[in-house]
Every structure is written in C-alpha cells, then in structure tokens.
Length: 171
View 1 (cartoon, rainbow, N blue to C red):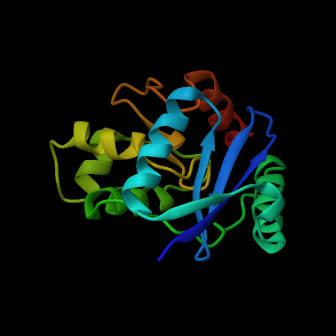
View 2 (cartoon, rainbow, N blue to C red):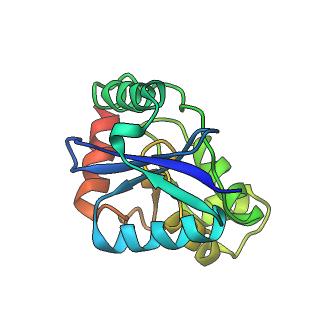
C-alpha cells in the first residue's frame, strides 16, 4: 500500500527548511542543501518503502499550520514541545534521537557523554553517526551535541547555523 508523504518548504532565519510529514506526523525537517537532501531521499526510500510525495499545496492544512507554528515559536524563543513525530530509523538511531530530545534548551552535551548516558561508553563515533542521520533538525536538537573539547563539530545545516542556534537558545 502506497503512503502519501507531504512536503513543504519553510523560510527560517537560518535558511529554507524542507518539512515532510506522513499521516502520523513530522518525519523530516531538513535544510535545503544538496548533501542533506540526498541523505533525506535515501532515508525516505529506506523507511517509507512505498510512498508518493505530495507537494506543499496538498499538505493537510493542519499539518502545515502545526509546523509553521512550531517554527515561529522556536525562532521567537518560546521553545514549544515537539509536534507529533514519525521518527523512523534503526533501533540504535531512535535511541539516540530520543536522548537528543532530552537535552534541555540552551544546554549542550558531548558525543561521549551521550554515549555514557546511554550505557555504551566508548561509542562516541557511532553516536555521531546517528546524530548526523537525525532527519528532524531543530525539533530533535542534534545541534546541542558538541565535541569533547566543546568545539562545534559538523552540522547538517553548517557549523555557522549550529553556532547561531546555540546562541539563539542561550539568549
């Protein structure tokens, strides 16, 4: 049975972001950069095996409004609870993403600390890979994970956007 996913682009202070929703919830909020779009396309193919992509005009208005309202609140420093999510990934990825949701606003953690908190010390590199594969930027706050020395490591939207987000949350 073919699923319908809906896509819409939202302008944000850190650049345009593509939102993809299923009937269950938000399954992607990704920077509109070629590398991130390629990763997203591969994830959708893997986790939504049979799907059809509907454009913004056909996205259910309630979904579009929820995403727009969440983004508006976030960028106005209101930091709302996440919208309904449809996070699909491996069990390990989902475990890491769930841990990301627990990082408080304006705080950071390291890949190593995240690994230790999940009971798998020494797996910082694997944690980093799962963080990189997070399909729902901002909402699942992968930007709050930094290197063991506090340095800002890679970020899907770019390190300047990661720095902007951390400063935005800390104000």
